[in-house]
Length: 75
Image (tube, rainbow, N blue to C red; front, side, top):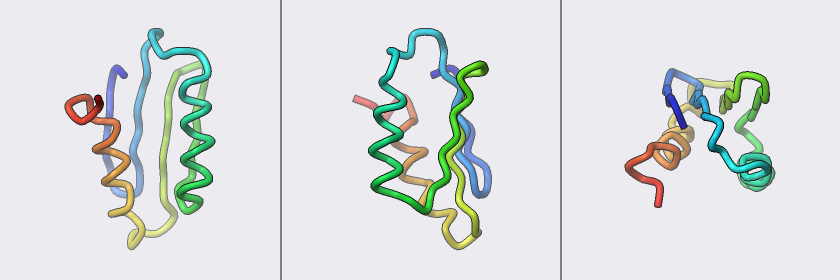
């Protein structure tokens, strides 16, 4: 991952060319089943992943996703 940003209602991550093919797609499939309240969008051309919620009261739910993507917390 090259950048990770947390704003109100969103987590935005940009990935570098070292992202294994298919890994993100498989991960997003699991995430969509687990957390249908999170809108996931990935743009292949820019390697940009956006995770978003619709309402402000759902915003804290993005914290765990942000921390899971933070390099210090990945195993």
